[in-house]
Image (tube, rainbow, N blue to C red; front, side, top):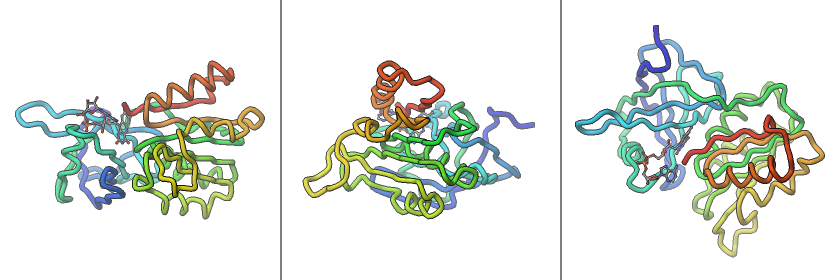
Length: 240
Ligand SMILES: Cc1cc2nc3c(=O)[nH]c(=O)nc-3n(C[C@H](O)[C@H](O)[C@H](O)COP(=O)(O)OP(=O)(O)OC[C@H]3O[C@@H](n4cnc5c(N)ncnc54)[C@H](O)[C@@H]3O)c2cc1C
């Protein structure tokens, strides 16, 4: 019988480079009928290391939990990073080893009227998984997603987010650029600068935060300590 520590083998169905620093893998389970997880969970990738034990790195699943034979992962390149160098060297015919699923950040049910997602870098992974997994059950909630990247060239996943909008009439998403050019007429600054525009003090709201630890710390300070929100309304996953 398998458990969370049993290494599972996955083949690569597709590699997509959204930007030079963002790579997505579409993975399919080998040798086992099902891989079950709940939206919000992550897997541990076993990165081969010459002459040593594999290095383990966590990656949040970026696709719907309705799929039982695989999932997508989104990777952000970290300079000289062990897993990053491994992932960017893949050709597509390799078998990847993972354990899981792990993690306890779940979509809270029954949901509040408004759901706000704040993410940076590759933190869209967990939030996209929530949206794709829950959209059929809760199509009419007010979803607002703030996606923090540095520059215009770092923007990705716009087609995927637009696609979700077709079935989610109250879903809005905004890219927030910390170093956008003068031509960028969207939002500039940090995702946390835009919480105040969401009327969360009047509308029952749950926040999901994912990615950069400093962003998460800032937002939690504002929501929990300054505004006094109940901690069941703020859920986070730090990647660093
Ligand atoms: C629960 C969880 C889920 C995660 N999900 C994802 C995901 O979906 N996608 C994703 O890309 N990453 C995710 N991460 C981060 C991931 O596990 C690795 O830490 C990251 O990919 C870097 O690994 P590496 O081996 O390439 O770098 P390492 O060899 O571990 O680190 C190299 C250097 O970079 C620094 N560093 C490590 N991680 C980061 C980082 N995230 N940002 C900036 N600098 C860093 C280290 O301090 C070190 O100096 C997640 C982390 C956690 C804890």
